[in-house]
Image (tube, rainbow, N blue to C red; front, side, top):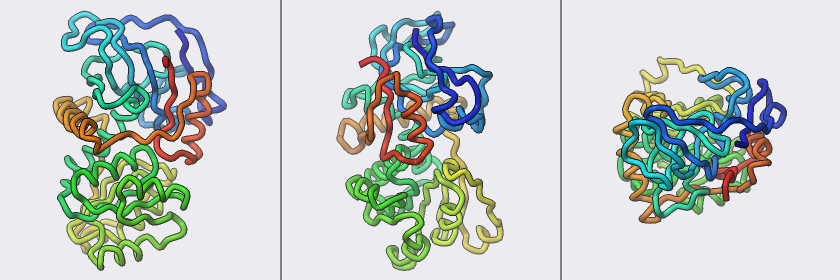
Length: 326
């Protein structure tokens, strides 16, 4: 089968090589999936650079989020049928076929085609757990979303709107502002142009943001600490800026706010029951038209390095999807 290998650590465009490898055989508890589409994710960038928290031995197959169809069942697998459409998450799926633990698969919502569904699992699950499990977002609360035009940011805006929150979106350029507005953001701020703490306080009448969704880190986190509301919650998702901020705990003390971490993969490993519950809720929202992954570009399998490199450069709006099998 065709696959992409990361052959060394560096920029994706420099270290990805297309190879031919043997078809995988599913072990007990695994499902062989014929991959239809892979959504490029920032972890793919970090994996190529050797900066992700999981460091596979070289060479390895990247790709962490996909949609496809069941090709075969390993021993002991129940609940899936050959030919069934599925979505899932696992490192090593940028290939024609992948053997995936059954616990890491969910049925594809009927409302989504494979290209859209390929971006459902990580982004929307991350947003769901951040807003509902970690932050306890309530109807009418102010939600500040950094990188709101990116894949996970756009998902967060959509889920925030569906939950009845009032959204302030932060984007990287004026060109991306229209996307955030179309998704339902009440106000849109441009990073490095607007004074984010001052504007958030102005927009909220001095109240501040009840919940902050931060996949950026660096100066975005620092700005959030200056405009989070009394008893607000800042959910740390990642550090796309490349800067891991330092929190002075006395600031959290005197302002009565909480900083919450979210690494979604831990729920997949430790509480798959909660992942299934979230997927059921997301499937319902997709059927109602409340959520739909924003796809910036679809590229063929042969252009996978270009797609991941584009993500590395922060040039995307929504998701870049690599079509494996049309």
